[in-house]
Image (cartoon, rainbow, N blue to C red; front, side, top):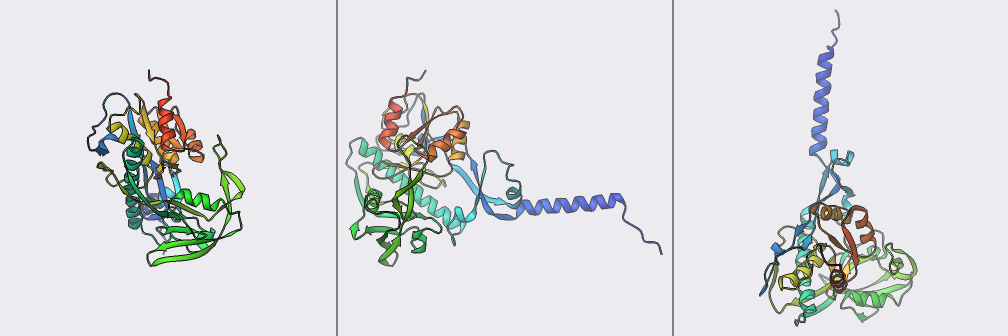
Length: 349
């Protein structure tokens, strides 16, 4: 009996079918990575409504930029160069352990809502309105894996109310009280959890500092940190209604852009004819805090053809300059500094 071998055509067909099936599986099955992708910067004005205000007209305008974040497919993990301007990030660096995509999205929406309220407060306070801000402490937004804070089981959404028995109302208080410590010290931290107030003893490690005029955070043997990212937890009462409708866009990084546009809505010419993109999380005192996704945001700003990009000073600004192309990148540390930078730009031609 003669054994008949498959014809070359049959083998080719089988191999092609296997290749297609493998590609389909790789394209459908999600990986344990996320993709950060650029999204073109968009005008803020259509999102903002201020009582007694109106959308600005004429040249220029304030722009915000978001980052498209989605779980990568296996194919995209293996061939992560298929999207222009992408960054591949491990899942545990995007969502805290035990947090689902839906939970993370809801938390991002909560942060967006908070940033909108703070933006209104900062802008109206700058204009001289009476804004009531009741600071409640320092809200823990993130805990660095392996840090002293993580070992002490500090968790996001908890609020730091005391350090060494002294009251904490804002993140400025955290900086001031931590400045009395050196790396290696142990700090008593009063934490407000869902079950009440607890006191935990947390070790400290060496942090870093960005020198004046610098862009990189360099190790600082005198700076003690716990390993948490915090923002001021506050109740805010605005004297006039400010409504910002960002839809399903989440995260706190549009705070600076929102605050600038509130001034524009109230007929203050902030942009002076320039197209100005802005990113940065605002604190209640007007401080501009660093944000993530700067590479994608800089690309989105460049694609939108804006003139100026306001970015948190330090590493954020350094990264933005790599990707913003001809866009003028201006590092800022506060809302007032952002306004001063725009006011001192040369007249728009």
